[in-house]
Amino acid sequence: MRVVGACNDDEHVLGSPRCSRAAFRIGARSAPVVPARPVHLGQTLSVLGRGKNDPTVRVLSPECVWITARHQGLAVSARFTRVPGGSNVAALERDIVVDAWGPGASEWISSAPNWCGAADDWTAFESSPAYDLLPEQLRLARRRHPGLRLPATGAVTDRAVIAIIEQRVTAIEAIRAYRYLVGLAGEPAPGPAPAGMFVPPTAERWRTIPSWQWHRAAWILTVPPPSCE
Image 1 (tube, helix red, strand yellow):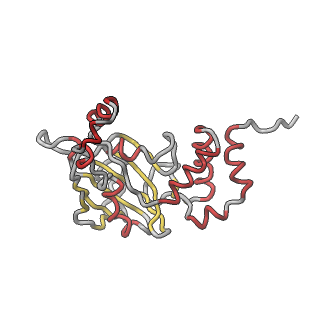
Image 2 (tube, rainbow, N blue to C red):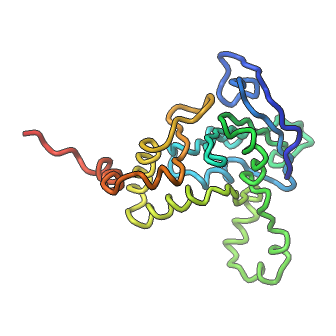
Image 3 (spheres, rainbow, N blue to C red):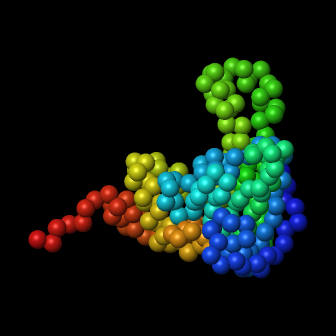
């Protein structure tokens, strides 16, 4: 999987849906990604999100996904969409177009293939004796979802924060707490990202959140406010 011909795109068409190829392209950094193997955008990128209202990942359709990220601390929002293809092109093998906005977009765009699972190659494993030892249900799941890839974002801090929160409280509390904290300490997604999307805080900003805010993040969304009576 590779990025081909990244370029600036200043086209702007009003009234188009957020997943239209012609819509909302002011100041965007755009690049086509050519998959080396089948990729299902919705399945691959949805694993990064926590719930349908995750502030950093929005799956609008199986072929249109928005994400937010940082590159060297600079904010980025990006839209992954599929290029329309003819009947001779398999749906999971069509090119992917990535449009990115924000101060970090120009440098971040080269990492877009990894977000699509470019490094997730099962060829060697599937041809090894170890693969045949897997339970039949796992092998069946793999055959049924050939486009599911494991994305590599490079955002270690972001994934670590989510994992830690999920280990400290229940799943529903973790989802709500993470959403609250990102909205509190992050920044609004640049560009025409869907409403409610935020860029995760930097590692430095995470460290400045006081301990009582971490506790309040879970409490405020799961406990009714005290009665004023």
